[in-house]
Image (cartoon, rainbow, N blue to C red):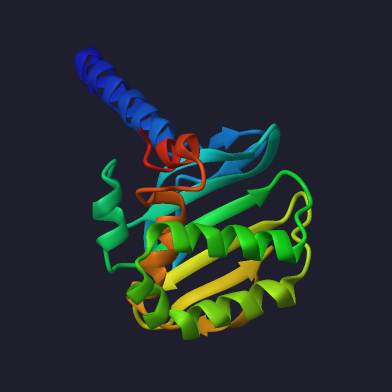
Amino acid sequence: MTKWMRANLMIGLVGSMAAVSAGAQPVEMEGQKFEPTVQVGGQTLNLNGVGLRRRAIFKVYVAGLYVPQKSTNAATLINDKGARRVSLRMLRDVDAGSFIDSFTEGLKNNLTDAQLTALKPQMDALTATLKSIGEAKKGDAISFDYTPEAGTRISVNGQPRGDPIPGADFSSAVLRIWLGEKPVDESLKKGMLGA
């Protein structure tokens, strides 16, 4: 092998390694790391963006959104019927009542009365699951995984809680809490959109 060939091979290898390592870096926010990809329902999902949820002066959680195809368009992400994950990393303790109230308020702010009525069984199932979890503790990782086959599965620290909640429409409604016209936190929405 000539010197020229060796030099080009080394340049190619270094370039490839740099590209791989640059694309595979976790995103860190408030001490919470989000891997660039996750597996949900046997599918690889990409980290779309990460944002911080504040309530008044308090930092409540960091949220990461994983989707098959990255997008900065909220409507595109909400209407996508493919698998997805919203991963919350708790930065403080939040009791079940406050958590449920926040979710219910987020749904009411982003859905019509007709949509709320149609989704009542799923909303009741969500409330029951969140009640069964009880207090969300600082350091907990809470995931909302959606697959078309199973519906929305909630897990805490990797342990599934409650039964999967069916329906792409329900999964889209939940995503509106963070990405809808009236999100719970505008800066969180921007972060999750990768904007």
